[in-house]
Image (cartoon, rainbow, N blue to C red; front, side):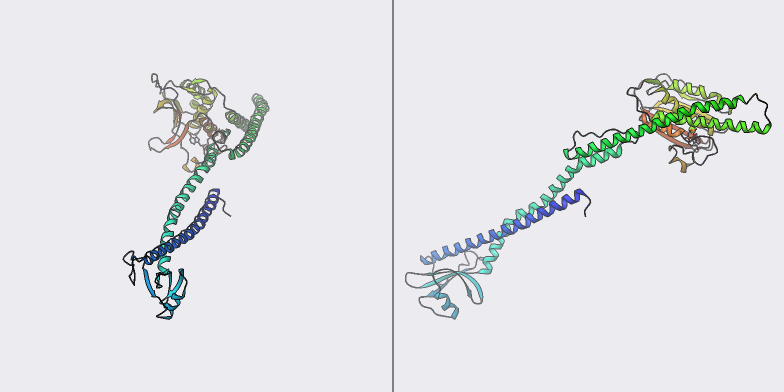
Length: 443
Ligand SMILES: Nc1ncnc2c1ncn2[C@@H]1O[C@H](COP(=O)(O)OP(=O)(O)OP(=O)(O)O)[C@@H](O)[C@H]1O
Ligand SMILES: [Mg+2]
C-alpha cells in the first residue's frame, strides 16, 4: 500500500498514460499498416494498367523506378507453360492474388491482354510488409514522443496541486506553542477547507485548555500567597520570644523554607502572567529607565553580597512592551547574576542600540553555565548541574517567554577569558525607531 498521495496519483496517472499510449499506438500502427498495404495494392494495379496498355512489355524490371519496391512484370504467354508454379499462376483469374513464387510469398496482379497473352505484376510480400511497417511506425512516433512530455506535465501538475497541503503543514509546524493562531482558509483549495476547519477547532480547544491551566496555576499561586504570608508573619512573631538555641535554629530554617516558597509562588505567578493573552496595544516604555529602577531595587542585595552592580552603558531607548514584562525580564537576569557571582565580583548591565536592535545585556563574573546545561536552560524548573542554590529554575524560562512574546532573541555566552570568566546574557529586540539620544554612561 503506497502511503504518499503524490506517489499514488503519479503511479495511477502514469499507468493510464502508458496504457492509452500503448493501446492507441497499437491501433494506429495496425490502421496505418492496413492503409499502406492497400496503397501498395493500388500501385501494383496501376502498374498492371500501364503494362496492359502496352507502355512496357516483356521481362522489363521495374527496379529502376524504386529499388526498394522491387516490382517485377512477368510475361506468362498465351498458354500455361514453364514450371508447375508458372502454370498454376497462369490458371488464376485476373485480379489481385497472394501466390508462392520461387519459394517466396508474393503479391501480384494478373491481367490478360486483348491478344490473349497474360502477365503478372508481382512484388515480395516481405518487402511490402517492411514498407508498410516503416510507414505505420512513422505514424506512431508523435505518440511515443508525447508520452514523456505528458508524464513530466503530470508530475508538475501533481506537485503544484499538492503544494497548498505542504504549505499548510509548514504553517502548522512554524506556529509556536504559545501562539496558537487560526489557520487561514483563504487561498487554499476547497478540498482542504474541512481539514482547516477541524484543525482550527482543535486549536481553539487546545487554546482554551491551555488558558484554563494557565489560569489555574495563577489562581493557585495567588491563593497560596495569603497563607504563606500569614505563616511568615507567625514566624516573624517568634523573633522577640525567648527560645532555646535548638528551637531558634529551627525557626531560621522555617523562615528560609517559607522564603523559598514565596519566591516559587512569585515566579509561578510571573510565568502565568507572561503566558496570558498578549495585550492588543502595548504602551511605549523607556527601557533604560525601567532597567535603572530594577538595578536600584536590587542594589541593596548586591551590596550585601559584596558585588559591584552597575551600568556599563545606558542609552535612552524606547520599546513597545508592558513595563512589568521588561522589569520581570531584567530583574530575573540581574537576580541570577548577583546570586551566582561570588562576593567581590561584578555585574554590569547595558542598555544600548546596535545594528538596528535594542539590546539589553547583563554580564557577570560568576562561573557561567556548563555547556551541557545550555540546551535545556530555558525549560521550566531546570536548574542545571549547580543545584546548591535555592532557586526555582523558573527565572530563565520566564525571560525566554517574554523575549519570544516581544519577538526578540536571547543569547547566553560563557565568557572564557582567563582575566574575568563569567556569563553574558544578551537580549535583542528589533528597533522600532532609529534616532539614538545622548549616551549616558554610568559605571
Ligand atoms: N548568571 C548565571 N551564572 C551561572 N549560572 C547561571 C546564571 N544564570 C542562570 N544560571 C544557571 O541556570 C539555572 C536556571 O536559571 P533560572 O533563572 O531559570 O533558575 P533559578 O535562578 O535557579 O531559579 P529562579 O530564577 O526561578 O529563582 C540556574 O539554576 C543556574 O544553574
Ligand atoms: Mg533565576
